[in-house]
Length: 175
Image 1 (cartoon, helix red, strand yellow):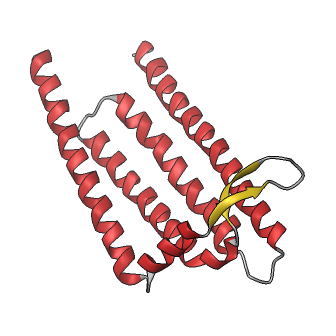
Image 2 (cartoon, helix red, strand yellow):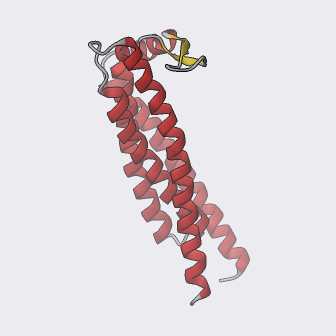
C-alpha cells in the first residue's frame, strides 16, 4: 500500500469514527431526555439557580448553583452520560486498534476513557450524593471540590495519553 493510500484510509476511517461519535452523542442525549422524567425542566431550573457564590474560606466568588442539592436529577443525568460515554470510548478504542488507526488517535482514546470514567466517579461521589439535609456551605463546598478534582482529572487524562504515546514510540524504536 502506498503512503497516499494509507493516508486516505486513515482519513476515511476517522471520518467514519467522527460520524459514529456524533450519532451516538445525539442518540445518548435523546435517550437521557426521554428516560429521565422532566430532565429538560430540571436542566433549565439548574441553570436558573446559578449565581456568584463565595468559595468557603476565601474571598473568591465563582458561578455555582445557589442550592446544589436541588439538582440531583441533572447530576444523575451527567453521571449516566459519563458512564455510557466511557464505555463508548472503549468501543471506539477497539475499533481504532482493529482499523490500524494512528497511535496518536489511539492514545487520545486512552485519555478519553480515563476522563469519562473519572467524571462518572466524581459526579457520583460529589454531586449525586448531595442531600437537602446537608448545610448549604457543605453543598457548595462539594460543588467546588468536584470542579477542582475535574480539573485535576483533565491533567491525569493528559498524562495517561502522553504515557500511551510514549510507550508506542518506545516500542517502535525496539522493533
